Image (cartoon, rainbow, N blue to C red; front, side):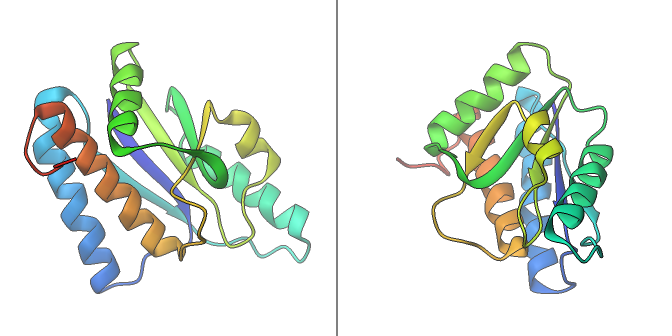
Length: 160
C-alpha cells in the first residue's frame, strides 16, 4: 500500500527536509517486504484567503486534490484518536489487508482543517495533545510510519 503525506506548507531545505527524507527512505526499504510504502510527500502552499473559513476550505480542496487516488484518507488533528505505535502499525496493516492501494495522511495548515477534509477522512488521528510545528509533525509522522514497518517485520527498532 502506497503511503502519502499531503500537507499544507513546505518543508524548509536543510535539517527538516533531510530528516524527513531519511525516514521516507527507511520506509521504502523496510516496508517493501510487507507491502507498506513507499512514502511520498505532496505539499501545497498555505491559503491566501483573508477569512479563516475560506482559507481552510481552499486548503481542504487542494489537500484532497493532492490525495486523489487514495482509497482512504487519515486526518491528523489534535482532537483525533491517539494510538500507540503498535496500534498504528495494526491500522496500517488492516487498511493494506482490506485491499487499499494507497492511504493519504492529511496535515492541515496553521488554522487546521476545512470541513471537506474532515468529512473525507475515514480516520482522525492525533500525534498528541501538544501543537507541533507542521514540519516537525511531518517528521514525527514519517518516523511513526517507519516504526510501524519495523513492528510488522519484527525488526528490533521498536523495543516496547
